[in-house]
Length: 79
Length: 392
Ligand SMILES: Cc1ncc(COP(=O)(O)O)c(C=O)c1O
Image 1 (cartoon, rainbow over the protein chains, first blue to last red):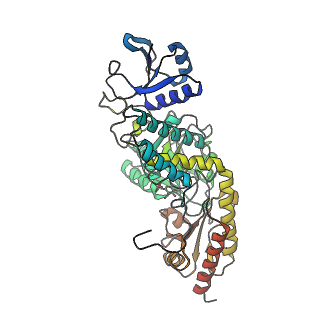
Image 2 (image 1 turned 60 degrees about the vertical axis):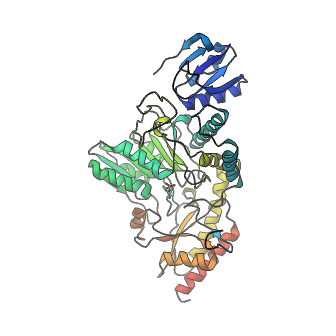
Image 3 (image 1 turned 90 degrees about the horizontal axis):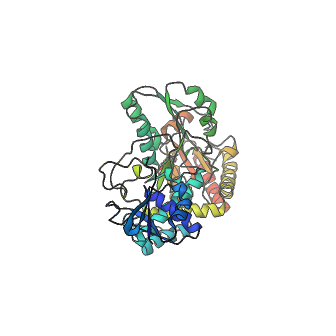
C-alpha cells in the first residue's frame, strides 16, 4: 500500500527526508499526486505502515496522510 | 587571466571585502551542482529537483548550526547582507511613525543607508552611539541611548574598518526590542552564537568569512518577530493561492534561489567547520598582531588598532601621514603586488568618529590562506612607503 505524507512547506519535506533517512525508513520524495492536490510541491511516499512513519515525523507536523487510491487516512491540525 | 593580463604574484590582504582565495572544495561543489544536479530546488519533483532542494536545506541547516539556533526554517537566503539588512530594516520600521532607533557608529552603509532612509520616511529619531578612539563601542553607551520609545537596536558585530568587535550579547540581554546584529565580518572567523536570545535578528553575507561565492547571504529571524517581505512571487508552495505564503522561509524567498552559490556556501561552511573557527580566528589574529606590532613602530604611520585583541578580528586600518590612502593602496598594488582597500569602506560614520573622514584609511584584512611571509612583505612595503613619505 502506498501512503503519501503531505506537508505545508518544502522545508518540512526536507526535514522529513532527514529524519526518515536517519531512521532507515524506505521512502521516496515525489511530487504531490494530482488527485490529492493541484498545487505544485513535494511529498513523502512510503509503503511502510503509516502510523509508524507518522510517529517518526511528529515534530515536522505533516498536514495529512493519504492512502494511494483510497483517500485521506489522517489529518493534522492546520494552523 | 584578466583582460589586461594580471601577471605576477598578488598578496591578497582584502579579505574583509571578499575572501580570496576560497577553498577548492567550494568550487568543486559549485561545479558538481552545475554539472550533475542543476535543477530548480523543490519546484518540479523529479530526482534532480529533490537533490537541489536537499542541498539548499543542508545549507540552511549548516547556517542554523553556525548561528547556534535550532530552527533552520528561520534562516532566509538573500543575495547578500545588504539585501538582508534592507528586508529587516524596512520590515521593522515601515508604518511605525515616530519613536527612535539606536545604532552604533560602526554600522556599514548596508545598514546605515536603509536606516537613514526609513527613519526619515517614518519620522523616527536615529540615535548613533559613538566609539572610543580605537574603534570600540561600549555596550553600556548603547543601552543608555535606549528608552521606552526605542523600536530596535542595530549592532555591527565587528567593524569592517577597525576590526573591533561589539559584544551584542551585552546589549541584547538588557533590552526587549529587536537587536539587529550585522555578523557579516564575524561569521566564520569569530565565535558566534545567538544562544537563548529571542530578540536577536542576524544579517550576514556568504562571501566573506563563510568562504562562499558572491551572491549568497541571508538573515535569521527569531520566532515572534513578524516582517513583511521585500518582494513577492513564486515559492513552489501554496501555488493555488495568489497571496504570498505566510510561513517561513517561503514568505521571504520568492523566485529561484542562487543554488550554485548556495552549493558553494555549504562547502565553505563545511570547510570552516573542519578547520575549526577558533583555529581560523587564531591564525588571522596572529597575522594581524604581527602586522600591527611591526608597522606601529614605523615613523609617520598611524595604526588604528590599539585595544583589546580578544575583541578584534583580523582587520587593520592605517594611514601614512601626509599621503592619501588611495595613493598608498595604489602603490601597494602596483609596486608591491599587495591588494588592500582604501577609503571609507562604506562606513562613513566610523571615520567621522575616528577623525579619518573623508579620506578614510588603508585597510589590511587577513584570511585563512594568508601566511607570515605575506605579513612580512606587507610590513616591508608599508615601511618603504612610510619612510619615503616622511623623508627618512
Ligand atoms: C559590516 C558589513 N556589513 C555589511 C556588508 C555588506 O555585505 P554585502 O556587500 O555582501 O551585502 C559588509 C561588506 O561590505 C560589511 O563589512
